[in-house]
View 1 (tube, rainbow, N blue to C red):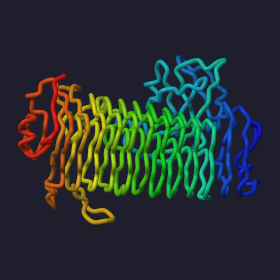
View 2 (spheres, rainbow, N blue to C red; view 1 turned 45 degrees about the horizontal axis):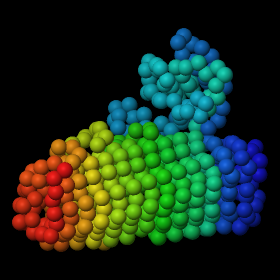
View 3 (cartoon, rainbow, N blue to C red; view 1 turned 45 degrees about the vertical axis):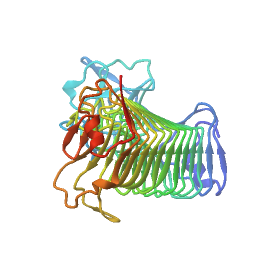
View 4 (tube, rainbow, N blue to C red; view 1 turned 90 degrees about the vertical axis):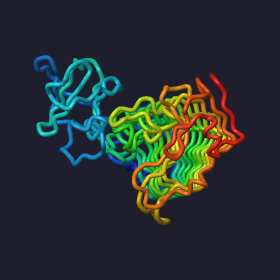
Length: 450
């Protein structure tokens, strides 16, 4: 299939099980492609599905350039932004020059060097740079691929420039047994790939980079495998880094295996399991340089966090940021049960490993409580910020006291600048390593100086 083909029509016209091979080049996608059962869409090197359309008719108006008639009608917006006043993250249409996104500002008067403003009421784009001789395009199409059919395969495609809204995917995996393999998903506004009721999906070997909100989302999808992907530099639209579904991976009401991925430099949480995750394994990943927690396992259960290299996370928080163990850590477990944190290398993060008990209400299996958490055999290097600590903390009026005896720190090794420093939090106390062991933790663990 050559560029210029209507891929939505191709999906409609081909039978179930068809393999659609796409040549190199740019395929304009102006409406969602909806594959049938067992269809495969397979690209080759440099096959691009593009959701941005050309912007023409620019004219100079004073110190800026304007183009009329390219914006959609204004729409209801959602999402919490780092900038909670003007909320730029809620606006999905991105302007590109020669394929590079231009930074959005939220008023006409703010248009200055290398920025643009979209006036939806007047249907006018304002640009600070002369676009003459350059390719100016605007992300307009909401979704590239979406379907509830089973056993679809998406392979070797670049999917970019889609104006998907917050919490929506440029690619929506909506059926069982999908495979998304060896694709590049980039420069889309919301989530790069979103799985919804997509049991046994396989997301493997992809580069999911520089999407506006989140690299990968998973909702009500069981038995998913997320393996060997690069999920990096997401949340370019600056959704709230600390606490609103931004960054690398977000898993909700699902089970999955997340293994052997590079999840780095996302402006949010690296891997976040939140609200009734049940049976998520996070294994052998590189999780580095994310703005918030490296791993956050929150109001969920049956988690296994093992063999990960968790480095330099939590150091780029903005709105509402603090430094304490309740703010974030390399690995955080928040009011969850039956979680094992084992054999990870945790170094240079805002804090080390933080186990939190908070009042969090009820879920599908009753009240969320902190219990049966084992932290064993990890290397925890606290030579990052001087405020870095590790351990167990409580917050709020707990309606059901946690089972502190089931929270066990065993055989961990710690590296400190000063081995006598009170770097361990436990039931409201700040302890040195001797006091930490005296409270029953890491009785065969060790501490070493830097």
